[in-house]
Image (cartoon, rainbow, N blue to C red; front, top):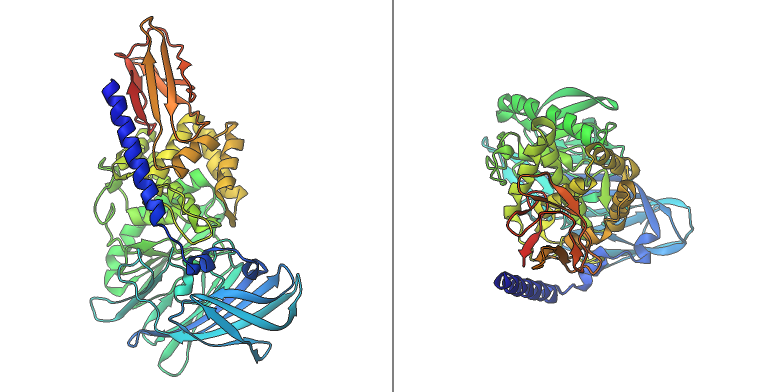
Length: 551
């Protein structure tokens, strides 16, 4: 057993050294700070409304247009920052009929007003811009415009920019902490093509020059990376869902060639998803804007009220079940996962990209809750357990704050495991369900931080989960539960963890008996289970993602 302990210590040192090496290599630039930091030039104004009006020339892969910023001053100021990638030209910035001077530094733009904008003043300016946008090479994992053609040779184009930033294709205040309250999206495309964006369709206009403008209005707050253009030879069909807040409109936009197979596939997945998620998380958060699926050449993206869909009308993730359990092949991964983001990511949104783990951990967990709702709790837990194979434990789930930096990709599978452990510790499924619904109610259409989430879960569960979240989110290593059996028959245990106050309850049992909770600390703690020995000890490692050492 001492060999196991030595092996554990060696692995811990190796992993710790590797993670420190990774951190040493994370050198953030001035450009990262300009994009990720909330300076007074960004916090001085609150965005109320955008009108984005863009013409897309697919043959030239060129865009031109404008965005109107309507804002309320939070403080007195005469200078502010907005964002636009520097490969796109700013043609002019207009304020009250005058062109404003501006300065560019990397992807940040600074404008100077002719007089002080006073606190609580409502005002506006318009940015006119043009150029060749960044072309995504592997959307949605990299960002920009995805220029493709369908099988009939017609243009098929989409935007995807999570992480990279919405300013890769349109000017905006590009920080997650400030969601615009409402927005009009006007996209002009060659006549014969259709653009589908977020929110409700407000009509189209033939511009008389070979282009048609499509207008979409978003009436709910929306984060910038969710704003999308989807251009193609689309056909439309519709349905409705009677949910917790009334009748929800369902709209589907698919390539003409796929209309026949899209309808039965969407019927089989969308309403079952909505029933499950409204049960677990509360009402769909955007009844006013409706729910849409829009077919794209790339795999998918959680664009609010206009989810990008590219899973080729099959169950699983491109036909595969990453959990290896079989449960993941009973439903379309992209429809379920990206729709889960409507609650976690779009309804409540991380205020800093470093906390993207909030979006992805809960949404990964939503997949298991979908299975739970339709196939039972054990099935959902098997799926979560199966997903552990993809966890690497090389870097924290949380990124670096203020520099537009995400954490490890473990935020998906490891994050889902974390929430399953919290549920297991709470040990009351109805209380857990109300906690998840409460999160979406408490932070309805708001931005949140790491602390907001941890504090809410701790308060509603009457247990301090802060040390547990800190260990699993802020450190790459998982904790190890060490057992020590004294020659006199007494049993002890303790946690080996990075967090000094780590004290997660865990379930153990004598083989064949029922599980019961024990409450280990960082120091050796006696275990009061008569008859427990090293040979009959069984730890619930099915639900608890931990290491176990037995001395």
